[in-house]
Length: 310
Image (cartoon, rainbow, N blue to C red; front, side):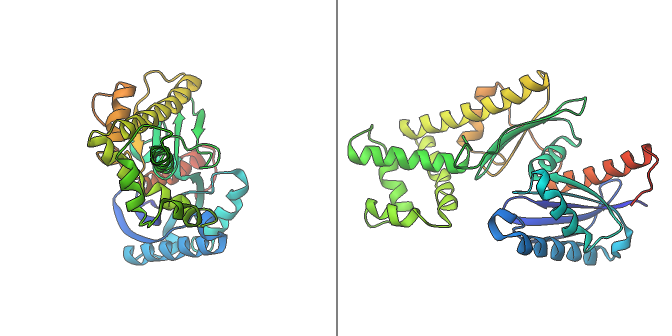
């Protein structure tokens, strides 16, 4: 029986599954974030390895039984990080075939059940990613809060705060965001926002955490908040359109991922409307299973090329 491991290092936690070729989960584990951009490479590697050992222990299996390991980690999508990813898993499963990827790719594979289709992701950050039938891939977005992330949780929170500040100073239309956002941050004075955010290591997450507040005011009928949500949806739809156009995938299946699109939200509703999707798409599997599917694909590719497994 072929046994593989899938690792999802995206978001605020690392998740690991051990499963067979039918994707039956034999063991699983979860640990703190493995995003090296947030916690550093050594701490991230330790989190990955601890979760791997936990999943193996629950499955009651020795590491030598793992034929391949699929892994996708947030903040480690570039070529320069692949050596680090390989070493992170080799310490636990030295004989397993590595299938190295990014968190958005395992989300796409999990959502569609295979490495083909289009993904629109909106969480703290945002992006769209697609893979066509020929295996060609295209990524739009994912540049981080300084250069992009339009339509993300950070973007929604930042635009909401801008609207609140402009309303406070009389430079923009009045909005309920003026009161609720400053209250949500627990500020005694609006100007306390400056020392609270500038130079803070948690500023991005604090601003992104305001996204539900902005969407709540949009649902409540505030026109300024509603306009921000509409702009966010149009930005996400634009990224998806760029991917679809570049890959010639006009009839491609579309999946949603990320905290702002995985549950019913005003942003998800508006994105469906902008993209002409009648109802929100449901993911077939979670990203961690997508990583396991990539591990199984790596084994098949090795066999077809005449290479030994593991």
